[in-house]
Length: 238
Ligand code: APR
Image (cartoon, rainbow, N blue to C red):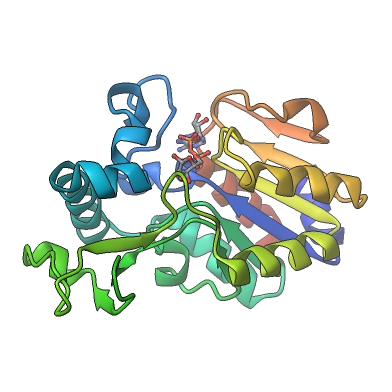
């Protein structure tokens, strides 16, 4: 059914969460077995409060995550999405992920709703630095301010340009495919609902149940995203 919808759709948008990158080796946040937030408190680590009140803990947490995106790479699923983008099978990707793996695999038109770990900036003057600064344990800007990853922390608003682009794409689509998100975090989790309200078909591919399954036209639980994408790719490429 998914292959058929993908073939007949005029404007398909893909929406990804951390489950898209677990097959690359990166942990997600809420998976029952090893989600990051099962043992760590996000408000204590991934928030503006953390940056202001426990900056050493904040930096160590993000240095580990920056190292991970340097050590791991996009998997077959990312590559298939990039191929589908080049063929026009999908028009854009709205991602909550900050690993930059969609772009690394060759996808264009990617809206990074939660920013990126691929870049740092000074909390004080905004000067932009490469992620290498964290790898080389340089945590201060030339102005003396603290360097932080260009991700959206809890307590911060989403980047306007990415949000606007995501809204535009969601408004245009007739097929909206969610890959690997528990759909628990607002406002990102509004996009599948907006697509549905605009008359698009909603597909949710996620190992576990999500908060928006009731709105989906097709749900695929209990399977690996990479496997599902490979299967669909074989059908639509034959
Ligand atoms: N195949 C299919 N589903 C998977 C796979 C996989 N290989 N790996 C994990 N999943 C599913 C899990 O079952 C889980 O429900 O992906 C989902 C990931 O959900 P979360 O861990 O909540 O990640 P996400 O929805 O992206 O979180 C949203 O929360 O902490 C913030 O900013 C952070 O962007 C993140 C946001």
